[in-house]
Image 1 (cartoon, rainbow, N blue to C red):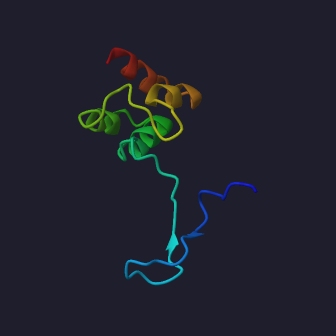
Image 2: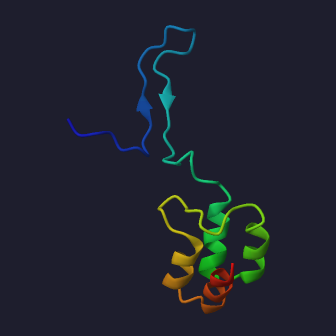
Length: 91
């Protein structure tokens, strides 16, 4: 039997603790260990927004990783954002 797609709702069966029968649980695939601010950090690194990154790094570490394991430096290099790369290397 193939594993269920984590993004699809799954039937949790009948509940005996007063919940409605056949309730559905949705797995959004979010890693609870990833700081939610990292989505903004990686978006700023991708777009070359050095000013936004400065404010965001007051809330998260420079080496912190996003959902896919990428750091802001990885993303800045991938998208050719030299100003962001220079700024991150100085931190």
